[in-house]
Length: 126
Image (cartoon, rainbow, N blue to C red):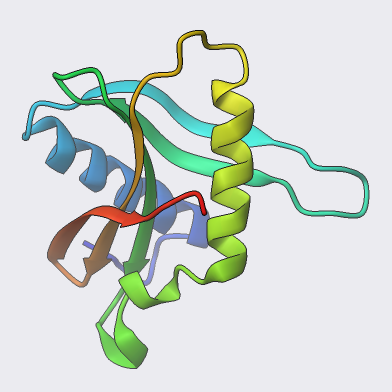
């Protein structure tokens, strides 16, 4: 899936497209792609790669990570505490106008080479 001729953005876009196709294959529907929120002039905001909905109404916030190989723990291991905090910030912003709040969860789609792994409920907002 990943080739050296792609830019970093191109690799990321390809990984997101692969993840989206994978999740749609399990019946999820796309709500929003690349939802971004700013935190302030000197603080990083957050971005959610994919927001999808399960058939039961659960809103799923998805972080997509891609690595050419699974060295150093692979793609899933690259979602650290700082990244999780920024994802939660963006999700809280996305949900701020909703009443009532739907059930939600944070998933990770880890792509290591050609292997796609969907980690449901990979972390929580706490």
